[in-house]
Length: 160
Image (tube, one colour):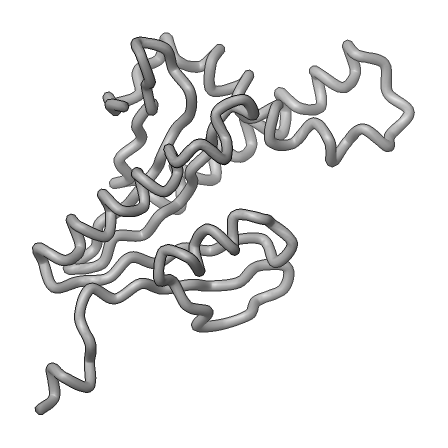
């Protein structure tokens, strides 16, 4: 598995990836396929603009496995904190350890700086269990999201 920076030519893949993560949310609407695609594209563009405005220094990467794009990861570093903005994988690549590997890389990078990794996840998102298994803990509930944190050091030990 490797990553590389996103380029403009990745937009079609990024839209496809976005659609796989959100299509189920709109499935209950009485939309034909063309209307559904238009709605998803509008939402995709809104998310892209929002991320660009909120996280102008974000690192945005495509995740590859065996030469094929399988997902994306967006992070922003501020001081010794790495904020995980988004991680998404195509459906047939979920549950195979790729997300865990990305999280462990972020945690390792934070550890070299004696820092932390933070993220927000929807309360009902099954990824929350992955984050908990990887050592993240809930710091705040801001419905419909949960703020989570992983610290690469123990603050109690640091104070002694």
